[in-house]
Image (cartoon, rainbow, N blue to C red; front, side):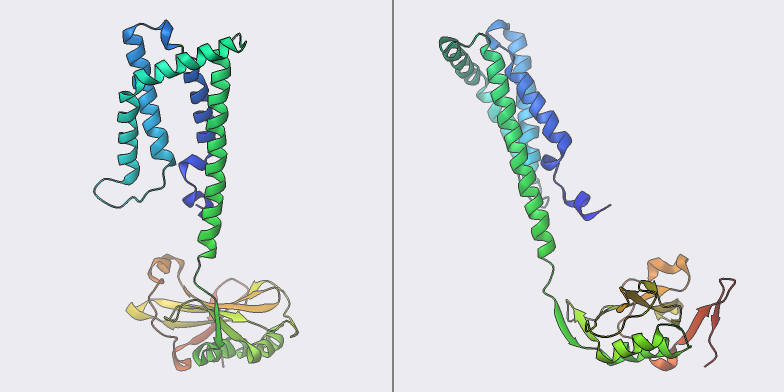
Length: 280
């Protein structure tokens, strides 16, 4: 699931916008003066329930607490809509008569159009606000910083790039000599991001995971590997992954520091796809 899907509120959904617009217009077509008492109560109940749902869907509130704000607001809106249902009928009838006096042959249709237009305008406003909030959420990422490349990262990368004569390695080693580290948090993370000066030569292929990996035994005995990622011909990042894909769930947060050079073994895939050690 993408970030956009995770953070899009219901009221910004096109389906919600279409349904709420149609419902608002449809309810406005109902003339309460032509209904008997049970029919009016039924219409009032449906209208109140839909009002409560609409308010709950559109209000911005936290899910924390004994009763979520959205639920509280929805229940309150339902109660208010029921309490003022008769007064609402009276106001609608007066407005209907005013439209007739102004020359409208089908005032209920005009009222339905107005209700639908107002609801759709609200949907567009909510959608714009949702896009803005998602954009601000992305901008809310911690500030980016830059520092001298960690000595452990540099040593690991040098070992991977120098373990075997592979096309692109000389260019990447030249980049590593001038590389700096980009970070967002002072705490240790098992991913190191590189920043490389633009004027340095680039490796070919431009986008790849360097074929040599550095394997080591992590906490708990899990076999881990360090991978060098190349993007657009430049060193992009050093990451930790499980040597066995079945152990991938045990990798996140397992490292507290980078392994020592004596703890790693450089490996490469042979023509049959098997991982074999490199004789150093």
